[in-house]
Image 1 (cartoon, rainbow, N blue to C red):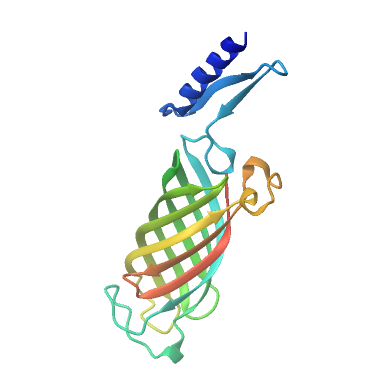
Image 2: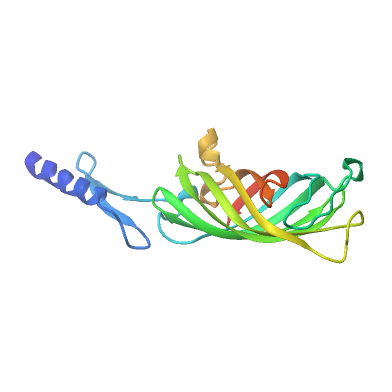
Length: 212
């Protein structure tokens, strides 16, 4: 009997190590003969969702953007620092991740409203890619396109547009010792630093993201 249990365990382990290509990526069940119970292990993405599939999310965050004082591809005029184009903003994002085992890809759109300084509105879209860390962590890079318009200190009749780049992280409750606080709904803390154009602005943000 012991040999049979051992052989079964070896076979199950071999199956669990094989790549899962199905969307739900379920691994075979393993049997604990000591208690006569059967347990099923399933590969998971951040927040306890499936390792393969689509993970839609939304986020709210705040931040600061500081533009350089030189001309750039977007055509934002040179201004004296005292004119204060720079300012704080509040932003909403909607997007989705596609978990790919230890990695993920995704896309998102954003709309931001300036709170101080001369930023009026910003909006854009970007792709994300990176890898998962721990139970619910993400480290990623992003690239996309962004539009910004100002309130009064430069031409307010147009949107200035350019590419945007950034890097960031997300960390969930399980990664900071608070597992079980939100369950699989999984609120995550998200920090990011991005730029408008090729380093023509410095834009750190921090906020909360959750999937739906």
